[in-house]
Image 1 (cartoon, rainbow, N blue to C red):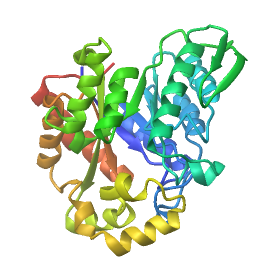
Image 2 (cartoon, rainbow, N blue to C red):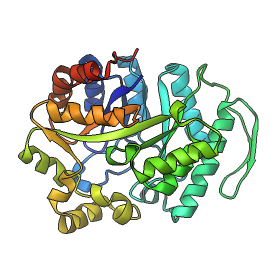
Image 3 (tube, one colour):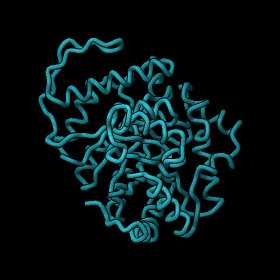
Length: 335
C-alpha cells in the first residue's frame, strides 16, 4: 500500500522543533517520516544540523510512526559497524518501524567532519562494502571482514531487532540507482527521477532484475519538494535551497556550506530552483502530483517543504491534500 510521509529537515530546524513537527505530522495523517542526516547543512544560511539518530530515538517515544533517514552515509563519518549497531538498537526500541536510508555522501558532511573524501568510484565501493557489513552484523554472525576499505577482525551485535530493517539506497544518477537495485531493498530519489519514465528508475529496475529480484516487491521512495503558497513563498524557499538543481554535478565535492551558499546564489537563478517544487495555494496541484507519482510506481512519497511555517504545511496537507489523494487512489492510511 502506498505511503505518504513527511520530511523532518535537520538542515533548517533544531531537534526540539523537529520532534513537534513529527507529532503534528502523525496527527495530520501522514504515514511515516524521514529525517535528513547531516553534519553541516548544504547551505550555511539553512542554519541547523543536529544529530539525526538522537532525534529519531526521541521521536519514537512521541509517535507511533515508522521512520528512517534520508539518508545516512555509512562510510566516512560513521563506520558501517556503528551504523549497524545504532539502527539495530533503534529496531529493538521500535520493532517494525525503522528503515535505514543510505547513500555515498557529500563532502559538506563527510570531508568536513573527517578530512576524508574520495572520488565517485571509491565512494560507491565503500558503500558496497558497508552494506555487506551491516547486513551480516544484523544477521547475527560473528563477522570477520577483509575488504579494500574496511578490515574487521571480529565483530558481533548482541542486541538485534526482532523484525528486519530494510535498507533503502539513494540513487540520483543511473549508476547509483543501478547499485541500489542490486544491493538494497529500495530506491531513494527525487520526485522528478522516481517514475518509470526516468533514466534513474530504469537503471534501478535493471539492477533489481540483475540481482534476481522483482521490482514490484521493492520500495521506491520519492522526495517531493512542495510550497504551500504562491510565487513569493516559493522564492523564499528557493533562496535557502538554491543549490538543489546542481547538488550532484557541482556541489557534492564542496566541503564548506558557506561556499555552497555563496556560489549557488551567484550562479543559479532562483527560478531554476523553483522549477523543482510543486507550488500551490490550493490542494489541486499537490494532490495531482502525489497521485502522478504513485501511479508512476512510487511506493512512498515524502513531502518536503523548506518553508519556515512547517505547521501550516503539515496542517494544510492533513486537511486538504491527504484525504483526496487517498480517495482518488483508493487507499487508506497505513497501519
